Image (cartoon, rainbow, N blue to C red; front, side, top):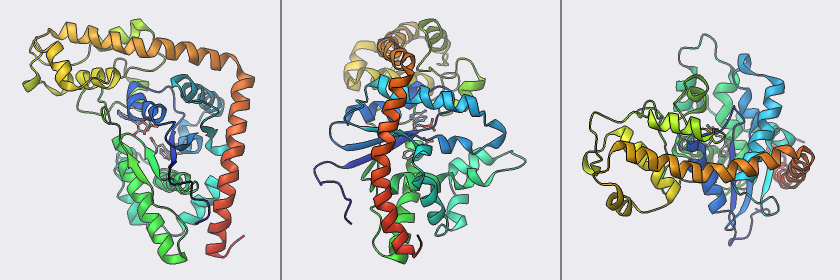
Length: 337
Ligand code: AMP
Ligand code: TRP
């Protein structure tokens, strides 16, 4: 394989969908890992807008364009440095869709029906679009197009990355060594943040859009954050006992730990026996310490639209150069183009 990045700098690829605003789960599960590891790898961070089209009734073309810019601004606002990373919009590099088709042709349908995200999202819908089923193949194309070594994500995406590996293996078996096998990389803490209103379900953008108090959104002001955290479900106890912490209390602790980065024994020493009110106040404090500077930088990027567009155009150009080389290899392997 000619485009393999140097062994010292692994190729890293990840993305987030531009659906409404991002929440604290997206931050600790994905974005913060990207920032922490940005100097170790040769990184591509993508705003995956094509993935946001899978439910046609929900497509809002104007809203989507704005959400793409907003998510890109958030990438930079959390600390992704534009000159050290390739930040771009998926639909600006056409090879993503081309590779998806070629991979579709080697994907057994059964593999897609088995995906838990597909099962969850299609459940109860009268009609399910092909795009919803095909979503993981587009994601595999994103990853394989760049000879990716590592994919930093939250734990809900691990199954999709396993599918990507299976697809690459199958393709290589059928058409000769073409793709590298990527690995999922999970954060040390906070791979799965749960809803504040219901600690049995994963914090998710779709619930956050409907239910106040479900999530902490990255653009929430202090008043909203306080309201959501203070109302978070705990249990009938009043004081924190680490040994018997309920799911709601554990979730607050997970957020606290993820944002402070401190080891659990140290947090235990600080908070054992504290009232739930005190724990919640501590959580509001660390959340605002994270969000306040982030929101300030976000506004700066959003206010300079020309600069944001320039950064994204530059990112797309760099990504396209890599994608074009991979596609030459793939087309040759399959006998097209
Ligand atoms: P999505 O919101 O599905 O576009 O997810 C974007 C990224 O955030 C992926 O890497 C997810 O694994 C991660 N993520 C989403 N929700 C959570 C959560 N509740 N806890 C931790 N990571 C999450
Ligand atoms: N499916 C991912 C999610 O919902 C987003 C995504 C699309 C992605 N393509 C990707 C993540 C490639 C990592 C690598 O979170």
